Image (cartoon, rainbow, N blue to C red):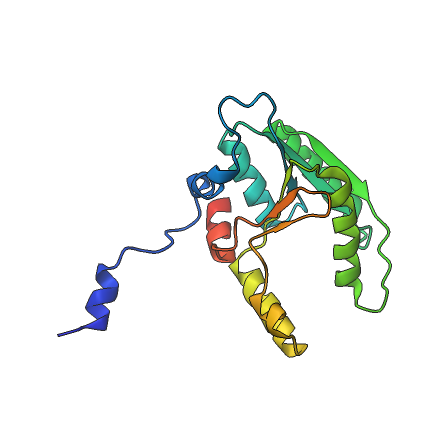
Length: 193
């Protein structure tokens, strides 16, 4: 007879927590071929928050055959913004990674400060990320659920029900990748400990 409790106990754990090796497997299709003379730049949108810090640290630990850079956008909204930028720079120094920071002016055009900050951030991303480059952001499964709920509350159409895309092309020709969408905030916190 079918026993759901027994079946669940026998199933392998689908996601045993976050580990850098899981990123390697997921991102292997984006790695350059062994014979390529030039390597793409992998930019990490580095806010300094836990999620972005975990992503940057994990990518650095993998020693991939790419050029890894951190890109911090200082929105100048919080009185702590400059301190956060310095903290990000110090972390990148510890990892021996190139650090780039840009200050932006966030102007609310009626859609809210979050939307205005995102718009300003992506303008900078487009300036840095070249046609053959990749931009990685640290959105995770909790962000995915939050985005879907917000869109439902706004009365989104079918396109909005897709929530956050795992990958998409940037206007610069580069590619935006969100490799943490299959991990929860709790899993990232566990890795950070």
